[in-house]
Length: 222
Image (cartoon, rainbow, N blue to C red):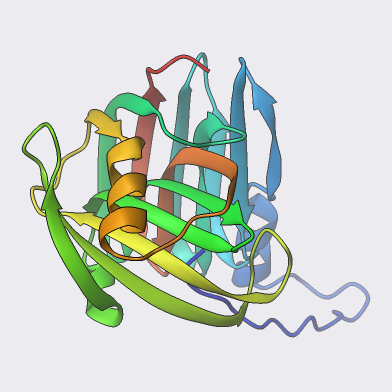
């Protein structure tokens, strides 16, 4: 979750017509987590995005967003707990504005939110992060590694202060295999970026005040 928003709920007068923004919120898929076709899924929205998320067969899901309003969302399918894994996925990703396609997850003790960025829209996360090092993965993919700090922001432990880890792919793509062990090892052994106990890990689509669509299939078994 990259961003947070503060919302003021205003009770409408009896019989008053809902505003277009209120209607957009009602049409959006509410936040949820669970298991679908053997995969763990996580879907989170801050409540102001006009966005539709759907779990499909196997490891597939779809998400479409935009058409008014804005806000932040992130969701997808994967595993709980996460950890070192070769993740193969495929699909389509068509963002218009600020959005990421990433291997996304959390650890606890320490509380870390991490992204292995495969593709993104108009905003590169390195723009607001601190560069650490670069490395070349075993498949010759190049990544730049960054960290950033989040102070009193939403997390899997509620509102908290935590660090974000980023591996940002230089040759952006939609589809392929990601070996998370390579990233975890590089973060910890080469960048002094410790990880804790793994919570969930998903192949995620995230958006912030943007529009677009994605249809992603996680091919690695649950």
